Length: 528
Ligand code: 16G
Ligand code: ZN
Image (cartoon, rainbow, N blue to C red; front, top):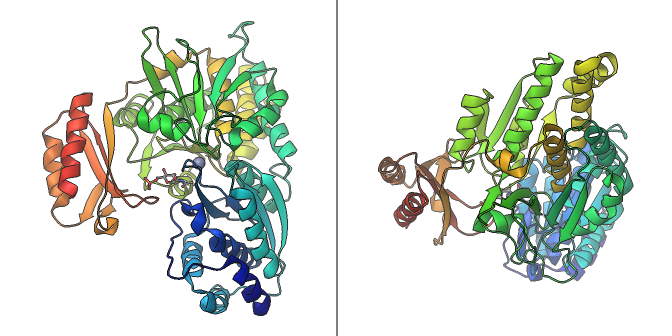
């Protein structure tokens, strides 16, 4: 390790002394003014991780749905997954080392993780459309090359596209070609094949309005459009040419405010969706004939997807184990519907994609979605092989179902939740089943709910258990919350420290909006 070169270059990306940041649920996120040293150091860390795993590692520069002025960075592990937890700790330590301690930290990590320093390293880099992202991806590359690593800079990509690239590169091209073109081709081919079988939609051409949050999703969807235009035409709004990234638009805005984004005309019964700033989340919505807004969130996406998959499996005559993974934020009605009507086992994990993804890998077919719209479906290798075999062998309806399922497998991004891929899956299912957004929405009725955030001096005073549904500390708080919950019908409430902001989050649901609001308010007072 040429520590001289590392130190010398580090001076160009000097850490403001005393600044402490943490590798959180989705990597580092902060105001862009605080991040240059983090970028350089994540380039260094990616090289060590690449040497240790003897694989390509990804570094994505983005702050997703945060305001334009922020930025962030996260590392992507060999199979396109989030960075392993022990390395998150290394990332935090490396980020917070003062300049003179940097070489010692690097040596420390290499020793603890038994990194073979002679091994080659390869890092792929992607970035979103933020003004600061281009410079930051150069800082990442500076870090990579300072430690002698090789790199490929993909430039502008959605986060899930970079996950896809990493996965492709580490599986010998079996999953797909590690190019943007390869991504478009793989997904579009599966989508077009799937929708060819949709006879019920007649000759009416399907259209969808997409709010792109003024982010990278707009650029990529524009490029990709021509590949799938036979099956669907998309109308792009908030495409970044006028508005500001994530400002009054995007999936996070729509979900948390439960209202349509600015910058998009919505006529009644038009199907619309929103991506977030790095296009790894999607929510759907529409206005009914009375002009009322209806949100179709990640829970309803999970329901649509799992019921479609189950129907196909019944048709094919295969009995794979299908599981749905949610978090505490899943609407109580969705959990009840999945368990009681669809008879699908449902599991709850802590918030954060890595937890859901990990749990979903335990099933033959694991569908996971956070209510906020991040999710995908994972298929075990054995299931994928079996289905693709059956798609060749079976005939008639069984054969048709097996071919559909084979295409669905190709259409879902197996590395991460992906707004573009999810959008195409949803559009294909709606077309195949002949469903409108209203009919999809009517599967079950969401319980009224409210989310609040409470500013506290130190969010770490609250710790939780049971997938964040119960408070452990401070003692006594859970009893207070449980007593409040008992005073309402169909109610549920929990509090948890945010992994991305310095706040405590409060969630409550109940039989009416007024009751959900009042329960959330009472619980937030108990937190103080
Ligand atoms: C991050 C997570 C998201 C989670 C959110 C919760 C990833 C890629 N993203 O954005 O899954 O829902 O954090 O934020 O894991 P919170 O802890 O502030 O509530
Ligand atoms: Zn995102």
